[in-house]
Amino acid sequence: MDYPQPTAYLHVTTITCVPESTESFCSDGSIMAAEEAVYQPKDAISTSIKSTMITGAAGAFVSGVQNTLTKQNVSAWGIFTRTGGTIAVFAAMGGTYEFAKTASANLREKDDSWNPTIGGFLAGSIMGLRFRTLPSVLGYGAGLAVLLGTFDYTGGVLTGYTKDPEVDEYERKEQLRRNRRRPIQQTVEELGEGRGIYGPGYDERRRERIKQKYGIDVPAATQ
Image 1: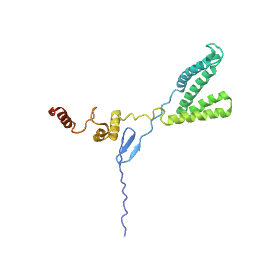
Image 2: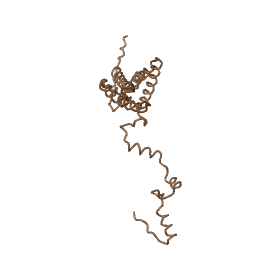
Image 3: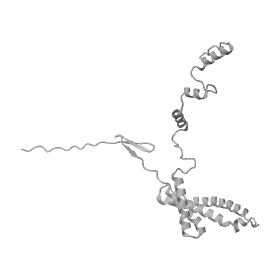
Image 4: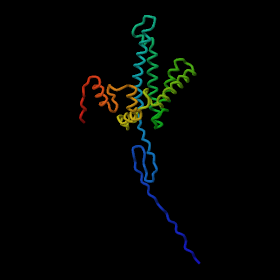
């Protein structure tokens, strides 16, 4: 006796993903991470020239201070003839750092903390070349690399992490006020009434005090 062969059914489920700002929400409840933003290459030559000019100007200022503090009577040209090496070191460090950081980002196609770390190592090595020893080159390079890499990794600003640009500043501050707001009764007990701080029933207590002290019956304010 022949039995019928079982029929296999293929159930196909269509999942639709809706793209959002940073994530894609799918119809099955899962979340699909959005693709990373495409890296835009930067002009390493232009940025390094600008950085060289800025740090060179800073080096000229430092060289002028050094030339002024010398005990010998030298002319104003001493910032180039006597302490001009400071200008060269500053300019070379700034240009090397910016070129290495930008070139590293272009080659790796990533804008992360490794780029300033690489640039900091090469810039610090230039500072160590003044001492003409290998430990100085490696030490200054490693020290500046750790300093700049850590600074960029922790936000790159001295005031802390940057705020989320998508969060409204007024709503953020209102949320902080709601989380840290004291009850009005506690505020009145600690500071007392007045100066814009009034507890419930303040008008009635004020009328009673005026009536007891001056004998004047103050009418209630109409709402």
